[in-house]
Length: 221
Ligand code: SF4
Image (cartoon, rainbow, N blue to C red):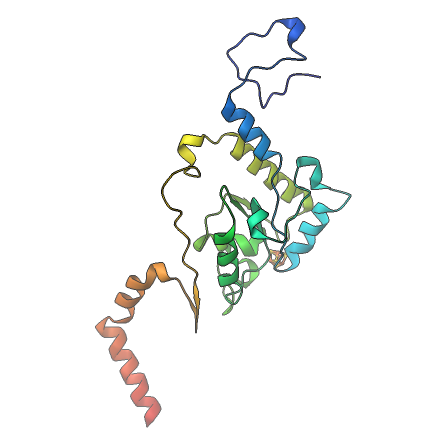
């Protein structure tokens, strides 16, 4: 068996006779190698894409081959959130709450056209045009629905990303307190607390207010 290429740190010569037993590496590479090969997805699905995700976990495609077999029903025990399906405005606050409850380091994979950008329902009154408006997304998997091979490719891409991470730069291990993503507020439309100032400014412009007043007058006649 060859020395593991993910672990091997180039630049050091290992004698020929030892190459199958010995590798030279860094603590960071070992750490990232271990993490990337035990990514536990959170067990939830939103729409049709979830069926493809279930299929990817089942015996034919079997993502346990890559260390992802343990799908967790608890955000505390999950490393990656697969947003599989249409994100409705009603479901959005729950998704953001679950994201906040995941422990660090945590990753998000947007699966399918709906999660990436709203998909066929983008103009719908009840659908969010992409989950990345609200939580950070690490990998996008396109398609409607993506195939199991597509999802596997996305998960392997996430593994590559994790292997490239540097502990000092990621921010996962910073001593600063974790800033939670504000949970969107469900009303006549979804309301993102981070944009409250902008919403106030836009909705209190004179032309907007005068339009509203004339509409109300017309309704009362
Ligand atoms: S992307 Fe297509 S398959 Fe996936 S949830 Fe949306 S409509 Fe369904």
